[in-house]
Length: 516
Image (cartoon, rainbow, N blue to C red; front, side, top):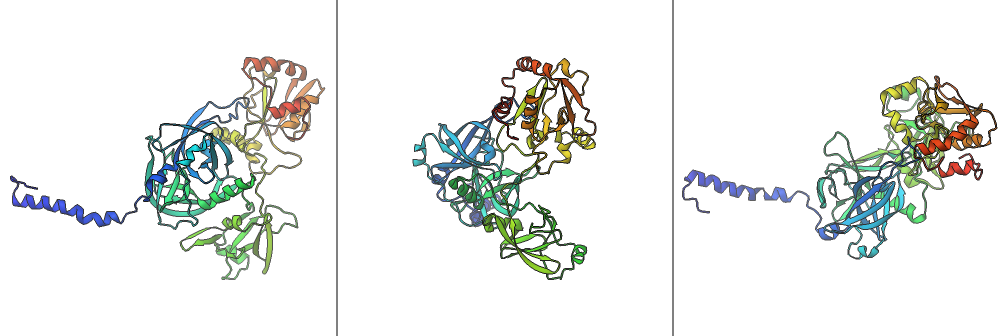
């Protein structure tokens, strides 16, 4: 370069500026590079388009308005596409689009695990896979500080995005009740739309992006291959039950007073049982038991087991590896004696207030009142309102007081008023009981929504008396024949096509009389 009008000093500075980038080149070259086989890898990453029709728990006779969302997916073996369950859950239409392609291809959901947040898609036209081979998956967990690349289609553009980072930590956490699993935290940017996209180390996938931390920067989460393999194994076997898990409450053994109370030697490490799942004599765990090993893995005083040289995770992680015939081996200390027990590890934990698990709410309408069963989705509204939650708590509404209870023979589920009363003279003068739990009809305690419908069907009483299960729950009295006569007009006035969901109509018509 010739600089005729520059002084010798300026020419020297410019020359030095040209040389310095070259001197810095080795440092840049040491940074992690994208996998060499980029074209084939990028061809395995697809954009997923979903039209969702989620349930409306407060208008259970209808669905929520259609919602268009996008996510990511990756081609796997068997001419399939792997993505997140939350990308395609409740989807009425799914399409995929390959990188740099103008065509969208129709897809269908063939398997979903909401607990593990994974789903498998199949394409209507499988010729796509001839030019888009499956992405290989690593068989080992990455290590903390390993370099990774996140591939996907986040918001802000339409082309494939690739961000790089490192593995920050590996944990075993609750994902979607009752399932828990390994979760890898990375600092590569993951944004809405990345969900379902692969995270790569070397030239192999190490996990699937599924979440980002709220109000935090450079914190993203991926589902590692170990969890994906468990899901795909269940899909291949046609199993839908879920993962085995431990539902007993345990705590750490760090506190000196706790250790003194239990008369433990300093060398003893483990987790202490706070509340066993069952209280019957035959159940293998008792309060104050100290669990020292799960299988052959020692448990430390923070209730952790060693995962690898650089990571520890909650000891419950080993259940998914050690469970056999529905049980897992534990070593205990009880009253100074060592015991070896087989702990049952069920795949489900029934709740009095369950979630919809991908379904739509059941309901039944009688006159101006809409009855439904209480679900976790229904609670989302009242629980997001601090004033409503405080009021429900003050009046001992079972939606609050029985949130974590199990069902039993007397009460299999909670029957709730799931919408405000429709305007009608039959309920004039009564307080609106939206979100109130119905305890009984004409003095008969309700076991379930189906039980209520059967009682309404078979009643010959002149009046219907509903009693609500809370401190301020006034009882209301309604004329039975007028309630039945008003129902059709109320349905028509409010554009409701059916008096009840299909399962409740079967009960109403006498075709089904089971508890649910």
